[in-house]
Length: 151
Image (tube, rainbow, N blue to C red; front, top):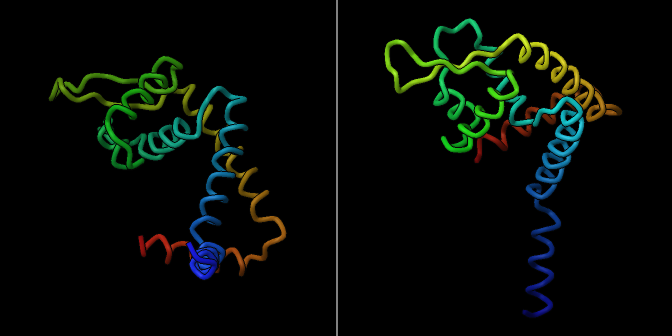
């Protein structure tokens, strides 16, 4: 590779926003998982709890709903739900109408833990936006949404 080729690719990399977004996302993921581990829960489990809590009044939430919401496949969600059932955070019951389907409901323990997780999210969010004005936050959100729409 010639020096010109190297500088060309280095310039592309240096001006790319993907690595910055990845660094921020990964840092947030690690920070949240570290804080949530104090409560014996992962970020993914928290995302399931929040989804179930927000939809607790719906008659039927199943594993497929969780898969679609979290954009992950069946076996991963099965394992996730199984661990959450073992921890008594989620109740899994067979659908009376179709025995192949299982309803998912957040338990009281899950609701209590979800409130703790919300507090953790608020704490992390606050640390992320300190020293950033409200206008800058709105601009950042707008730009990130535009980038997300381009994917």
